[in-house]
Amino acid sequence: MTNTNKILTAVGIGLAAGAVLGLLFAPRKGSDTRELLAKKGTKITGTIKDGIHEGQKKFNSLKDGFKEGLNTINKKVEEVM
Image (cartoon, rainbow, N blue to C red; front, side):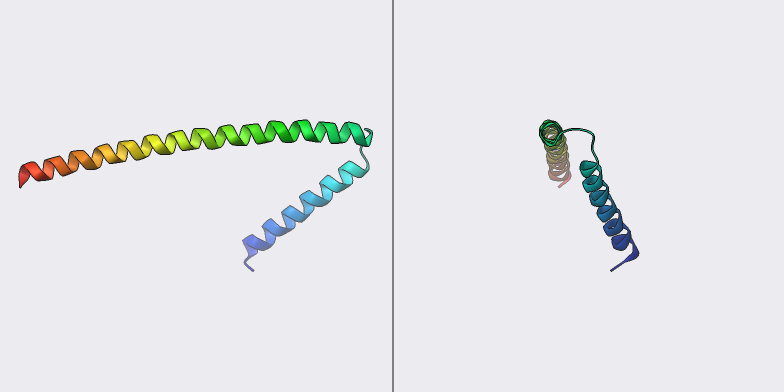
């Protein structure tokens, strides 16, 4: 295991432990905390989906531009030959 993997593992364990302790000592009732977590989870999921959608649009745009560039190069090569 590399140092980077060890560090990332330790950070992940620390975050998980912090989240568990935060929930255990939270000043809210359990039902309120679960509702809050559900709302935040839904919001995060929507944000991730939006990001993926934007990424796909950018990728498709780059792909189309790349195809156009290749077509232009092919035409120029055919003209030269």
